[in-house]
Amino acid sequence: MTRKPEGPLRRGWTTGACATAATKAAFTALLSGEFPDPVEILLPKGERPSFVLARRNRGRNWASAGIVKDAGDDPDVTHLALIVSKVRALPSRSGVQFKAGEGVGTVTKPGLPIEPGEPAINPVPRRMMAEVIEEVAVAYGAEPDVEIEISVPGGQELAKQTWNPRLGIVGGISILGTTGIVHPFSCSAWIASIHSGIDVIRASGWEHAAACTGSTTESAVQQRYGLPDFAFIDMGDFAGAVLKYLRQHPIKRLTLAGGFGKFCKLADGYLDLHSGRSQVNLETLARWAGEQGANELTRKLIKEANTASEVLTIAQQQNIALGQMIADKAQQVALEEVNGKVEIEVLVYDRDGKMVAGTGFN
Image (cartoon, rainbow, N blue to C red; front, side, top):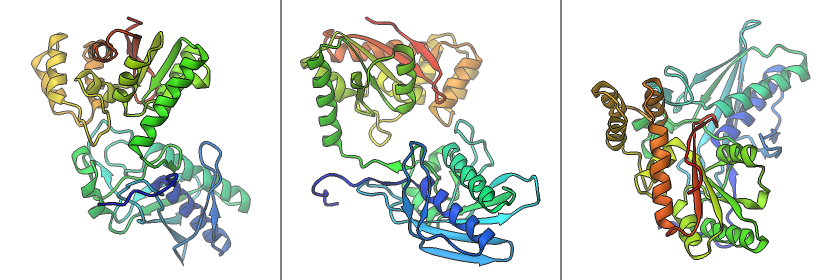
């Protein structure tokens, strides 16, 4: 049994942040002959962490650097994994190209943010690495034309403890992260913060709050309504914690906003939306699509889909109002949970933050 750390949980760094720092160090060494150690990078939200190098190497026309990932107090399978970036110079105008090295997976199925055949390096880490390549190139008067090969020794074995095999990512782990920071996952602390947030909203007399599954949906709701920061409940996967507390401590109106995949689970009656504790039921989605007029082929494609995002794409291509059905069913579940004491609307968004469906308040 893993011992629970005493005191505040320590945050860590994503594989994407580590890969970016290793890439900056390697490219700097390729151009200057010297590895910066520690190496500092800029994260998407403005933080500037420094990383100590665990490995460094140079050859003709290439350099590599490695960083040991520190996931803080988060129970992450990649904690203490070595993230290595090998940067190789390419001919002028080649741009930045990515390659999967040892232990980094390759995407083989549609429905993910990376196209099949590509290294499993997500869009934000790709952008971060491209930005440090540009930054270093400008500093040394060089061209930003390189191949970045990311490796994670032992990553293929680590991937067996993730959802990668099920998602069709073969050969290793994914390089992930949208903020560069791993926030430690403490259920009790998170739920306590949800309760505190609702208490603050009630104490302020504010009548309209929003509970969102993540930063993308929170930004979308902020643009839609212009709510003050304190009116946002950091729900994450804990829909049940929000709704159960509101049943005892109601407010007037709640906007419940989340991604299509998360709300497929809520619509199916799950109140804990974490991937480790609830799964999207493709058989159920196919049946619901059939109720909306989907033919046998469309239902078959949904049952065989790789991700909820792919299901949404299939439904949209066939003009099946599956998103609206998910919103309606999720609203029914939420209203039952608060025992009708709160007016609730449900807004469903796709991966890019575009609203797929909404219910209005009820």
